[in-house]
Image 1: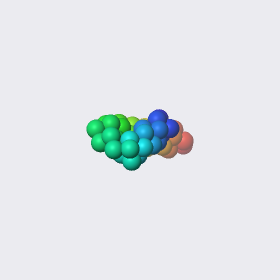
Image 2: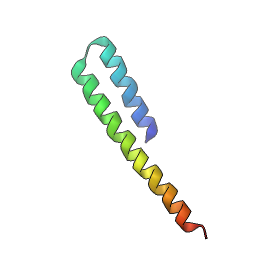
Image 3: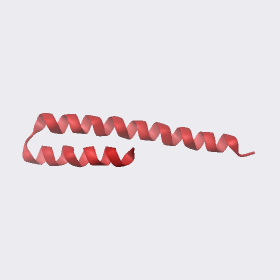
Length: 54
């Protein structure tokens, strides 16, 4: 999931450099959403792994 977030971030940066503002904003928004989903899943997995160990 983090890989896709980074890929959309790269697309957003390239689009911004080339002057495609709408595409850059859309790709940056998708990258931000994917990053936060990754963060929630990573924290959830960490908490669950702590709860399983006695």
